Length: 360
Image 1 (tube, rainbow, N blue to C red):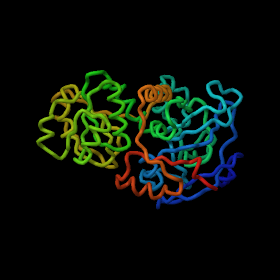
Image 2 (cartoon, one colour):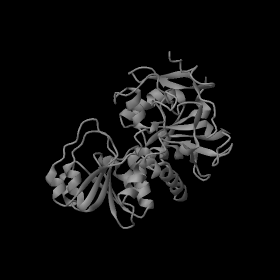
Image 3 (cartoon, helix red, strand yellow):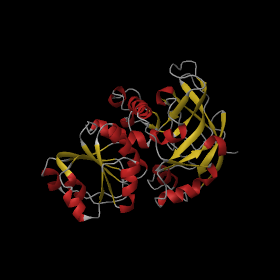
Image 4 (spheres, rainbow, N blue to C red):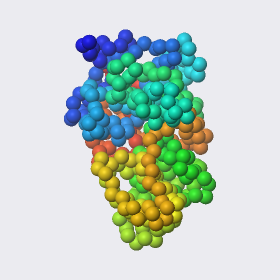
C-alpha cells in the first residue's frame, strides 16, 4: 500500500514544525492526527520543551530518524476532547505527554508500571504507532494520545516551567528513587549542570539529600550553590578538589551526554556507591574493573520512568514547588535555539510558546 502524505494520513488536520533532512532545520508542516478514539484524550498544545534528544533526532545522529520528523516530548496543554471510555480526564483539564505514547500493556514491565522498559514502547515522535503510521511530537498545535499515557498537571504548577519535567524531571527522579538515593541525609553527586542536572539538584534537595554538583565549568559554582541550593561544588578538572572529595558520595547521577572519564567519578563514591548514567554519550565509555571491584561499586543506567511514577514525580514537583528554569521562545526561533543548545547557551531549558506563536 502506498503511504499517504502526513497531511492525508489521518482525519484531523494539524500543523507543526518539522525537520525534513539531516540538516535538522525545522520549518512549518501541515500534517494530521488521528480521530479521538474511545480511550483517547485530545488536547491543544500550549507549550513544548526542547530536549537534547530533539537535536539528535532531527539531525539523525542516532541513525533511526524517518523524515519528516516533528520533535517534542515535553508537551503540555488543555484537553479539548475525550473519547467515550476515558475515565480520568475531562475537557478543560491541564495535561501533559512525555517521552512515550504507547506500550504493549501486557509484558512484565507493563504489568509493573514500567512501560518505559517495554520492548514495544512507542516513542512520542519518530516511532511506528499501532496503526503503522509515524508518531509526531509536540512542536505542533494539537496532540492525541491514549489516556494511559497522559499526565495530569496540578493546578499550582505553571505549564511553561512544568513542561520540561515530563522528560528531564522523570529522567532524574526515577533513578534517585530506584537506586535508593532519595533517603534524607544521603550525599549525592550530580554531574553536569544543564537541563537534567539543574532539575536533579532541585529534586534531590527536596528529598532531603545533600548534593554536590560536579562540573567542568568553575563559573557555574555560584549558580549551583546560591540559586539551585547545592551544598557544594567540585570542578572535575581540578585534581586537588577531586582528590579531597574521594570516597564521600553515596551515589552519582551523571547527566552528561559528551564523552568523559569514568574513573575520577567512581573514585568519589563510598564503598557500595552507585554511578547512574542518564546522559548518553555516543562513544563507549572506558571502565576499569578494579575501580568497581575495590569498593563493590555499581555503574547503572536509567531511562525516564513509567506512567505511575511520572505522575508521582509531577505531583511531588507541585508539592515542593520544583520547576525547570526556562527561556520561553516563539516557534520561529526554534532553529536558533537548537544552535544555542548545541553550544550550551541556555539556562537551562528552552520552552516553545506553541499556543501564542505557532501560526499556520
